[in-house]
Length: 373
Ligand SMILES: *Cc1c(COP(=O)(O)O)cnc(C)c1O
Image 1: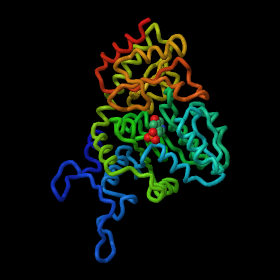
Image 2: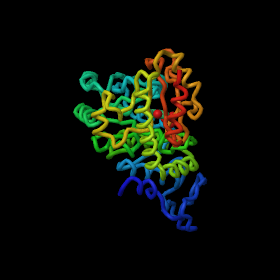
Image 3: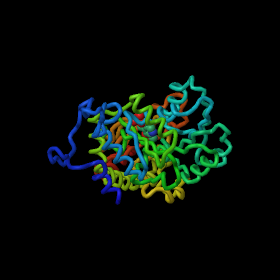
Image 4: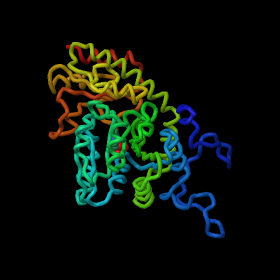
């Protein structure tokens, strides 16, 4: 089946009790036992699972063509469950430009966990190989990365991880299952912040873990979900599943618009550099061509000048909202260096864009007006 059909049908069925075409929201926290003590309908207590979460998880697994999926209350709750599943003394290899929250999870939440982490440039495969240790159990990738949209070669990383007897993870939040298929490259686990494109409406915080096959880390994450309890509410699951129905169409529209905007910015006299994997000028364009079927709705660009010139552009736009996050219907603009704080290595003249669902020509006029000197 093709992804548009999966997005509408997976995890859905006509409600047997009422004939409702859209599933009801089951708020009940507890479910009836049979006289013999069994739960023949598969539900007993809502933290362990509930109908709306089960439906969402079925759909998430199908979207990635994975074996199984777990829905969490945020993207970082997924990361926390994965790190929690490691043993004291284990070593992690992670990208040097990884989503800052993962660094916080490893460095703050698990500060006492006796884990070692090497942050490396994942686009440099020799550096990844050199970072491996006998204790390496996890190789984390995030592609496209934030905010420079660097592209990691997933097949090469999966291979390196497997040879080292480590589990490979891909945070595919920016690409979504519509544009990138990490399991086809041999990656073991896929992570999404469903807060972004998968829900796609900037109104639910959530996360997903999808497993290609059975492995101990996925099962430990299931334990963290069911007993640790970082679970999404039935309503959040219902909203996310509703968002997924339009995912393929939204992502393709956002991707096409981003490609046009990247091309316009690249030619603009007030722009020094554009970071978008769909541009032939992008250093990892060849890998992106190989492992992505579109290049996504995220891009960043450097304004000629410095911090002040970039801030002035962000202050002048009218359609783009100055806000963090991504993947929703509203286009967003963000000065990443201010968000990341004083340790940030992001160029001071860089602005990140999340392209929404507005008319592309309107967005281009807005940016051109704001860039006028
Ligand atoms: C937002 C984001 C996360 C964290 O997800 P939350 O839902 O905010 O916890 C992780 N990875 C990437 C790439 C993200 O953009």
